[in-house]
Image 1 (cartoon, one colour):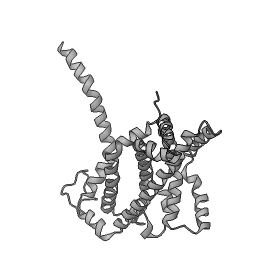
Image 2 (cartoon, rainbow, N blue to C red):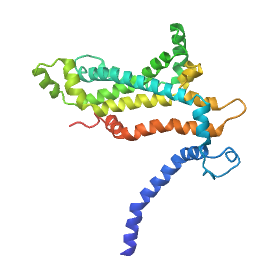
Image 3 (cartoon, rainbow, N blue to C red):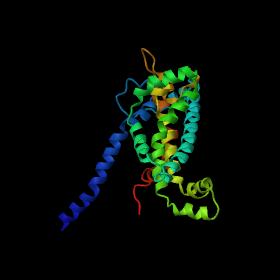
Length: 281
C-alpha cells in the first residue's frame, strides 16, 4: 500500500520536475546574460562561474550614461507603438470585412488563404525589392521606411486573427443593432469592438513584439545612429576587434525588461486572441 502511494506521488510530482528542468534549461541563456551584466570589469572575463562574485551595477551605469541606449529605447518605443496602433486599426476594418462579407463576395476564402501564404515568405527574399522601392521614394534612413515595412509584415497574420475573432461573435448582435437604427460602422464600433478586447490586444501585442525584436530590416534601412532602434543599437557595443561584453549584457537585459513586463500583463489576451474562432457552437 505504501509503495502504491509513493508511486502515485512520483507520478504526480515527476511531470512538474521535468517541466521545471526544461524551463531552467530554456532560461539558462537569460540567467547567464543577467548574471554577466552584474559582474565587475575585473572578473567578467576571468571568472568561470555564472554567478557574479561581487555584484555591481557598473555596466548599467556605463550603458545609461556613456552610450545612446536611451535614444535607441525611445526609437524602439516610437516605432513599435505607431506600428501596433496602425496595424490594429487596419486589422479591425480588414478582419471585419473578411468575416462579415465572406458569403457575399466571391474569392474571400482564397484571399484569406493567400494571407497565410504570405507569412511563409522569409524576409530575406523581400529585402532587395523593399530597399529599392524605398530608395526611389527617398525615404531610406528614415523611420517612415521601417514603419511601412513593419506594418506590411504584421498585417497578414493580424488580419487573419481579427477575422477569426469576429467569426466567433454572433451576427445576431449586429442584426439587433440594425433594427434599432445603427449603421454598419455604428454596429462595429458600438456592438462588436466592445466585446473584441482580447482580439485587439493580441494583434497589438504581436505587432509591438515584432517591431521590438526585428533586426534585419532595421539594420538595412536605418543607417544614422540617432535613428536606430534597440536591436540595432546593441551592435554598437561590438567593435571590429573587441566586444564590451559587460555593457552588451547590461543593455540586452534592459532591452528585455519593457517587453517582458508588457507580455506578463497581457498574456491572457494573447491566448484568448489566438484561440478565437477555433471553437464554435
